[in-house]
Structures are given as C-alpha cells and as structure tokens.
Length: 203
Ligand code: GLN
Image (cartoon, rainbow, N blue to C red; front, side, top):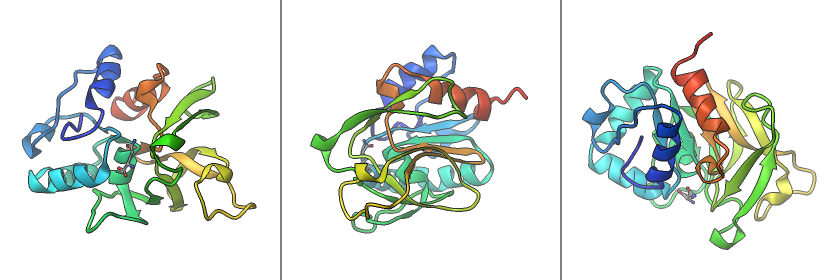
C-alpha cells in the first residue's frame, strides 16, 4: 500500500478484510518482496513530490517495469498515467499505463458524484462508483483495455455533445486504474479483482 499520502487507511481496511497482508510503503525498501501495490486517492502532485523526495519513485517505476501488479485509484490513476494533460508545475507520474489523463476533469469537490457502472470484467452486478475531483482518461493506447466508461456529459467542460464515452476504469497488463474511489462504497469488486486476478492469479 502506497502510504505517503492519500486515503491509505480506507484501502488498507478493505485489502485486509479480503485477506491480504498490508504493508505501508513509505520508502523504496518497503517495496521489496511485495506481491502488489495499491496507490490510493489523494493529491497526485503531493504524491509525486514526496515520492521523488524520499526516493520511492524510481523503485515504483522499477517494480512496474518488472511486472509488479499495481492498482491506482483517482490520484493513483494519475500516478500511473504516462501523460498528464494538465500537470501542476513540473508534476511527474510513475507512468507505465499508456493513457493521457486530465486531472479534476469532472469538476471540483462540490461536483463530486456517485453513479453505478457496468463492469462485466470485474463484477456481475453494477458497481457503485464515487467520483471526487476525479481524473478522466482522454486517450487510451491500443494495449489498454477499457473496463468501464461514463457518458461524456459528465465532464466539466469543453466536451462536444457527440463525444464518445469517457473511460473511467482501465487495465493494461499488470496495471489497473480507476478514476473513482471504490474503497468508500462498501463494494469491494475492484479490490477483489485486483487481488484474485492480478496479484495471485489462479488460472
Ligand atoms: N484531483 C486529485 C489529483 O489531481 C485527485 C483527487 C482524488 O484522488 N480524489 O491528484
């Protein structure tokens, strides 16, 4: 569990309840021996600064390159994105996931919303999803699997009427990312999917 910033406790609670042993990652050495990493929601620019300051960033990049399963939610999605369309200052990401994201694309804190998503890859039931200053995926590369989308009218501005759906849950190999916060809804489908299908695949 990436633990330098964000809603670490909520994710840790869900992961532990699903039987995972949760290790807080605050230094590069904490990544040694991990089977998977969850990057929570929070503030990506602060995550970036702290990760670089404390030397965690290169270790996470190395883990990603070596196939470490990583699940990023909201700010965590931004950290996994190859490209941030509207970075603050010199904000960097860990990268690895071939997407371009726009931070705060659905509006600010007061425009937060909850919706229900069809995600057949992850759950047989609609999955509740809470969006809080959430990023949108503006571009997804050819190797990126879109797991769920929302209609473009949800975006704050600048979206033509006829634009297609906006991806909000994506996977590329060992990397999973959602724009929304699955740790606050009581629906643990995404955590379960990550643990069962990506961290310790049975098939
Ligand atoms: N807007 C935040 C960012 O840019 C993400 C918000 C969140 O994680 N809920 O990092």
